[in-house]
Amino acid sequence: MYNGKKIVVVMPAYNAAKTVTQTVDEVHQQGIVDLIILVDDRSRDDTVKVASQLLGVKVHVHEKNTGYGGNQKTCYRLALEAGADIVIMVHPDYQYTPKLIPAMASMIANDLHPCVLGSRILGGYSLLGGMPWWKFIANRFLTLAENLMIGAKLSEYHTGYRAFSKELLQTLDLSHNSDDFVFDNQMLAQIFWHGFTIGEVSCPTKYFTDASSINFKRSCQYGFGCLGTGSLFRLAKMGLIKSKLFPK
Image 1 (cartoon, rainbow, N blue to C red):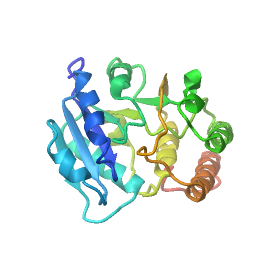
Image 2 (cartoon, rainbow, N blue to C red):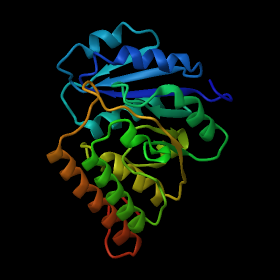
Image 3 (spheres, rainbow, N blue to C red):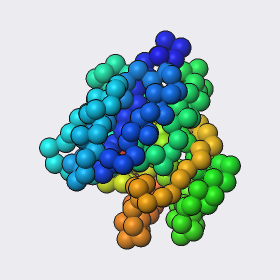
């Protein structure tokens, strides 16, 4: 609990057997998390076996692989069903440190922002943490383009470290979002569409062998998907098209 709020951490998992224990241990060390929900997307390693033995972790296993976005849809549904007031997504690959959980929860619990992102760009941690140069350049270009199209000023749209209030999650209709990686981008655009604000905290990050990451081809597909989301947002805002992602 934090300020009387139930804190639930969700972990969309895929082949995270080597890192999930370290991630969960550090989540518990923060002392404010009431429940961890790990949703396994048909991992090919021992993620489910390892996670099932960890204290304070509720494991849900998909019947089939749904993709990163599909996994998140399950994560947020289960968190709300569990009575969460604040939901924080932490990847179980330990790429993002759980030590920021108290700061992110505090910003939501004290009504500063209903959504908080852990930014790899603020503080210059991206390249220092080993982000490939081509991903950094793509991140900067896509963020600039999306800020212009959406009318926002985020430092980045592509971090996987996110916290949400219950009220925000209950407002968004995520059913029409992609089940792939562009889900993240669509969700942020929807948050702005509904008039919510987004806060950011500086987040150290690590790139290493066991940390999940998409390849160059998938990154290109993701990039075009992000540009498509921004364009759709702008056209819907201008009243030129109708979209299930951005309903009137």
